[in-house]
Image (cartoon, rainbow, N blue to C red; front, side, top):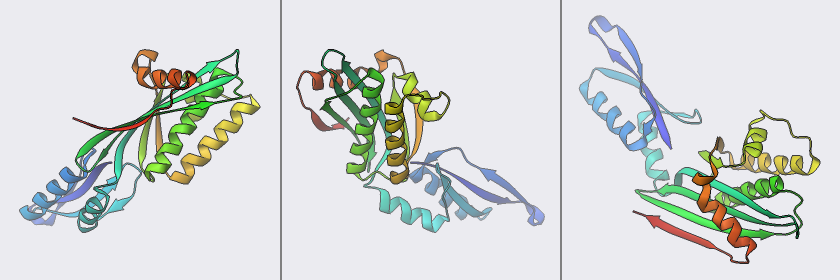
Length: 218
């Protein structure tokens, strides 16, 4: 989670100038706030997360301590593979996140029967990834969601209409899940070459290879 903070700088004659920082880590925000406070030239600190929730400096210190071990800075990659001959799908998801001072990656896939199209497989893959976030305990956080299906991402953003009843049902499921988790998604369409991990997991699911792994990254 990134934060920005606002503070008032005191000039001679009690005149004040309001400043706002860029989005930075919680630790850096607190350090800057403490140093400004010690200078005696700044006051009225307010910290904001990417969702818009606000805290005082004291509340911010407590917050960062409490969430230190919770997953944060989450990026999700998803991909769906589809076999038209069998109406089967392979769902692949790769999730990068921080927990404390460490970085992790989860790789997972799932085999799914009775799909109708490749677009449906893509929706199912994203829903599969959201279920993993729920199992991780992710809630009320911004999440970057990346995939190579521009159709799915544009429909989720509301830029493109969806006329197919089956896909609309998946849209509803995904939006309900996002709402229940309280996450704020940022959708990013990427080239297929940048989505190789999720694509490979989807292909392995179609081959009957079930995968779920959590790896600490260096």
